[in-house]
Structures are given as structure tokens and as C-alpha cells.
Image (tube, rainbow, N blue to C red; front, top):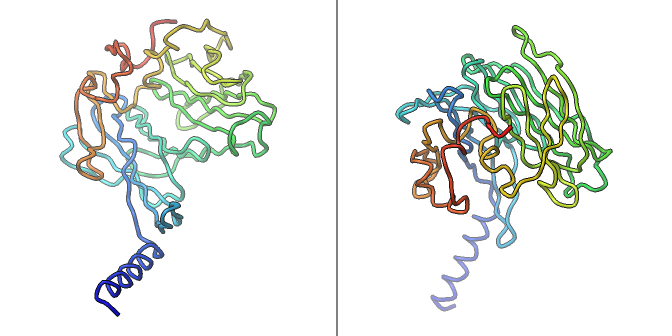
Length: 289
């Protein structure tokens, strides 16, 4: 056997072994400012991954942790670890002493931001799909209000409606506020425009097709569609987001894996499509209503 053939065989054996083994991976996601912009929180997803080249791979043993970090990115501390499942969305409502972490079509967890104790888990209630829904899951999302004392729990239903349930903080408990429905097989934009009103757009034949302003007290009002699809209102959807009130953005540095960095929102090269990006975009709430 030639030296070249031997090297090829060794390479194939090495490649097969490396692709066929489970490897542990960590991934930082969703660094966000607290609602008062004084601190930072982020998600660390952990999982095992087995590569199947060239078709992708499999994952297992998924869990996530939540870390807290000072505003200068100098120190970090673990808040809670090893929550089963994955999370891609995070809100840090420091004024109300909780964080909410979850993923759009699965569970959302509310956790005490000082002790790390689980306060409550919000789960989708629907399992049967809307016939017009794209994909094999019902959409589910939990969004805290600007002051963090209210929650909007939004879910698509088998009857091709979007259910919006408001919860209100009462001492240490969350009580039912009001419940509303709009037509749609899914929703895309979802934003608190004030501490009592939610802007939501539905999906019918396309998404962002209709917009509704939903007030906890006064109910549902359909609002006129506009050319910019209310982009200045929906750029951030509550007071805890990736950008602070002074326009400082948190982002993951592509040059250094899993490193959180800061920059002005106007230095983000991916936001050129917004054109006239202004202070209105990253301020919580929206004065258009």
C-alpha cells in the first residue's frame, strides 16, 4: 500500500470517528439590558451534538443557564443552571425582580433575578394545529410589559385565532387580567407600546397583514396599516432588550466565540436596511398611538 493511500485511509477513519461521536457544546444567546439599563443578563445553552456530514447532525441533552453581568462587561455570576430544554429569548425585569426565558413555541420560565428560584413556568395549552398554520407547531410567547408588572401570554389556537391573555402582578402573585382574541394563524410583531397597551400583527395569507392595538381595559382596536409597518414601534418589544435607552447595543463578537461586546446601535452594519434609524427605534414604548 502506498503512503498516499495509507494517509487517505487514516483520514477517513479519523473523520468517521470524529463525526460519529457526541461532543459537548455551549452557546451564548440573547444578551439583554435590564429594564433600567443598569445590568445585563444572558442565556448559555448547553447540549451534545453529533455531526452527520454533509447533512447536518443531531443534538441531545439540551439545557440552559442564565448568567448576570455588570454593565461594564467586567464580571459575571451564575443565576440559575441546568434548566431542561433550550431558550432563545430573555427579558430581565430588574425592577420587578425576575427574568423570563424561553423559546417561541415551547415553555417560558419566570425566575427570581436575585435568588435564581423558579417562580412560574408558562406552557402552551394547545396541541392541535390550526389548519392554515405554516409549520408543525402552535406559536406561543410570553412578553412582560414596560414596567414588568403585567404579562401578555400569546398563543395560536386550533380554530386559527390568536389568544391574548393578560396577567397582572398582585403582591407576589400573577392574576388573570383580561383575555382577547383576533383572527390569524400566526403572529409576528408583538410590542408593548405603553404599559397598558399591546401592538400585535397577525398572519393570514401573509404576515404583518393586519395590526391591532389591544388595551388591557378597553379591548381590541384594529389600526390602519402604514408603509413602514410600524418599524419604529416594533424594533424592540419591551423595556428589556439588546439595546439600551442611550443606544448602546449588546452583540456577540463574531471574531471571538461566545464573547459579548458593546457598540452604538448606529455602528451595526446589519441595520442599514432601516435607513433612517433614529432614537425612536430603541426607546421603549411608542408615541404613535
